[in-house]
Length: 366
Image 1: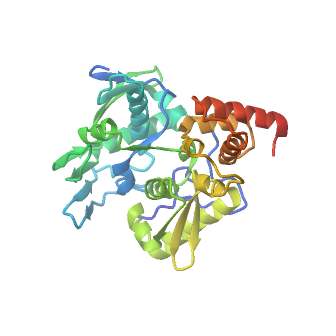
Image 2 (image 1 turned 180 degrees about the horizontal axis):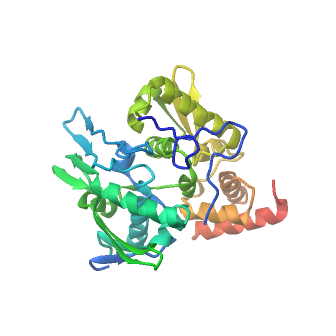
Image 3 (image 1 turned 60 degrees about the vertical axis):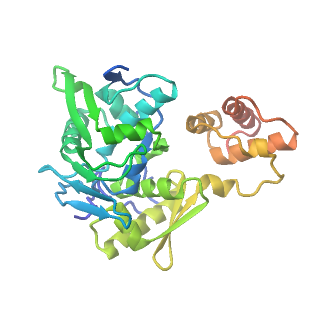
């Protein structure tokens, strides 16, 4: 099935370059783990980034998928009668993983069953908190439970043959009088939970939830997994099509990727990486952070260049210095410390935010 559903928020809607922004507007321990919303930063498990487990289609996708590898490993994804879980359904897993990883980082006990307030999930994933939003959440839970995976791929250092759903079960604990769900319980599969326990997850940019098109979200997965912290990652269009799990023809897939790349040239909207379609049907992901920090006016001492900031620090930097590129500010901060012969700060995140505030006081908006 093709990915494009014109006019649908969740479809591969084509937005003409130079028009509106391709991003959606910013909306708003024991056997049971109770989520504390906004404690977590978006996290995605590496296995879901590696394989196109989730459908790009907004219509029921009932086609079985199987991926085999030279080393004998395989992944097979079987849909239910209601279709494969979609890229947007994955938001629920990202939310659950984010909360569990945040708790694990704070040395709190975690469990496979997580209880959360439905409205909190809708806010966290930038969804509309309306009747339609709650109905969509219920349908997403059904598809996640119905999609079955068979695999012998390692997670958490173990290799076993397993057959499981993306979630083991889901339960709506309470509803409001008008039928909207209030609290939800989701039990993750052992496979997913082992990924969390082994920290086989990567941090996502919060703007991931503002990407309109399922294909854009899948492209971000590929860029986040394959480019990572490298400056550049290139992949052939045909291979990229397979990694995305697209059912479009090559001609249509090329058109869709080209449209996204052209939007990125105009709006600079693609999170963390710039996306370009090159001659010879090559697609290039360029790390925005690396591109800004490639050349410094002074040679940075090892202890300063090695400093690592938390993902949430960059969001705070954007608030401290509105309008300024956060990675540009980071480079300015590192150069300022090196130029002044300063030692690396004990709390680099706090020091960086303080620098951003003073930078904005001196320079105002760019």
